[in-house]
Length: 469
Image (cartoon, rainbow, N blue to C red; front, side, top):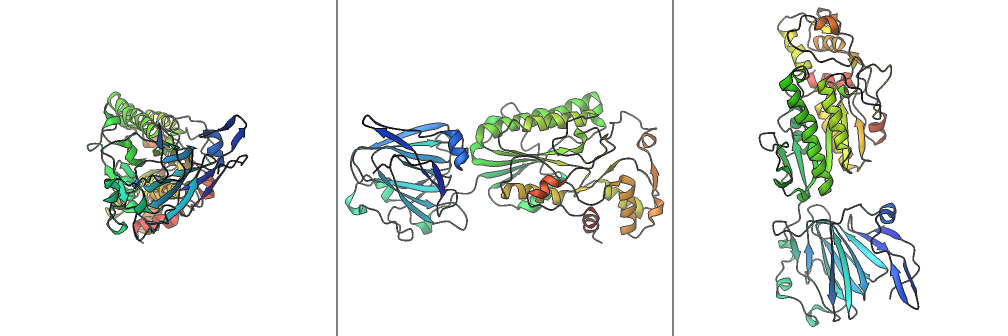
């Protein structure tokens, strides 16, 4: 029986992500009215802003009409316009809650949000029942579906009307038992820049599960005009953009300038559009070069952009593009160190080869190790942290490049006094070709990422671990 006058409320069920909603229904002698879908109110009450793209209505004129347990690769908001149904939901997603069951009656004063991969089925309890459902993807024969037999003994659903007395389609009767069901895999994670320093760290952190995809630019050109159609993007839940043009000095040349803008801005804008169109979370890696380095204190996430060179300008443009996606994390780093060619590796090599280098001493910052960046990205995703920009680097006292070089020499058993200081201006005084201006202050404020529960490692400890000492 439809209940009038309830307040809007959304509650969790025994299946993660399956939410039951009590809907206000207003009625009088003329009939009744309800807001079947009201984005602002329902998101405020705790429903995901799941981005519906299609509204379907199903009508059953007979009591007992029973539809099979189908799990689809999209989210659904199911409600009743007239009549009443018994609903049964079974978690058919990969994971620890596979096979969990939840049942409830749904009438016009109640609705349910069914997340991707949770099997749903309905049995009509009143004649002339009509129910509606919003979905956030269009049907596709290429999508992955899963099904469960209505009479599965493991799920043991207590149907109000026995299954042997109702009409069930032959197709639904033939669906497998739970032991033979193919679970719905999570939405895919796509890591771009898979062969770079951070891409390699992300592969080590995320592993090679079937739903995780790694791509280099040769494998997926994000500047291609047909990018929107080269993947079924609705199957992806997260894109981690670890790709970038990072040759800061070459970016000051005419050829490098074009390449930097294409990789760091144009491609990023295309990814942001795809992410926003398909409900994808976009993770993008930013740089301290979006600032001019003239601040006297720490750079917070909301500091105004003031890039000095082409590389910094393109990274700032990319950050602005990412912000157009509703679901995004911008992870801003500085002085990145990982597997491959980098400053720490170069200093260790110089020390071993007996070279006494001059190293810049007027640029101040902190190292960002790719293992830590990867950990921070996973933390933001797994904790559903608030979307936005987060600074990520090592913690501890800021240092100059020269200070870090001396630490590398000392930790690898060499005399740190072999490293001498030089200013940025003097270091590049005899450079051949264009030189990008460097920010002198690259120290990032880590309070925001720390507040999410992620504690950056001390830079000195991280350097020791990286060097294996």
